[in-house]
Length: 176
Image (tube, rainbow, N blue to C red; front, side, top):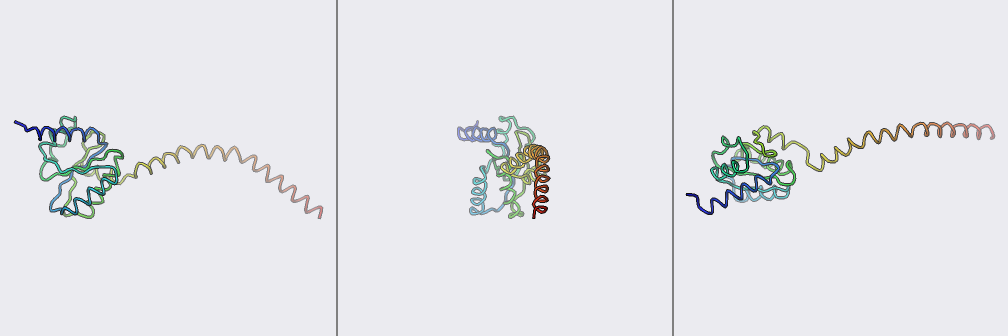
């Protein structure tokens, strides 16, 4: 019979899963308190949250949230990095941490938009540019055709102005 604390934990994990735009499930071994604190701080600065979870409770929460395909990843010690505002930045922070602690950290799986993804897809997600950079690139792509149109429309006027300036310069040369 489940205890009230376990039911509450499952409900909290389910809420986090439903709220998260992406998440990373990783296995960790022999991380010190200072290293875990550094990870939590780094992920929090990126707009995410780190939780060490019990596999059975997380599996129940995932099923309740409608997430399929994580069962095989729920073995061994599991830490979950939730990304709330930006689906990439906290994942990138966790990936940077993983690069520094290769012996102690292994990505098992992830979630993106409520769909389970494998470790390779998590790494590809971590390599994506951040939200702000993607928005800037999109703005640049949208502005490029308008900029080209303005330049094209302005070019005949500029050519006429250059011809008139050359004629005026030639007349000044004749007058002198």
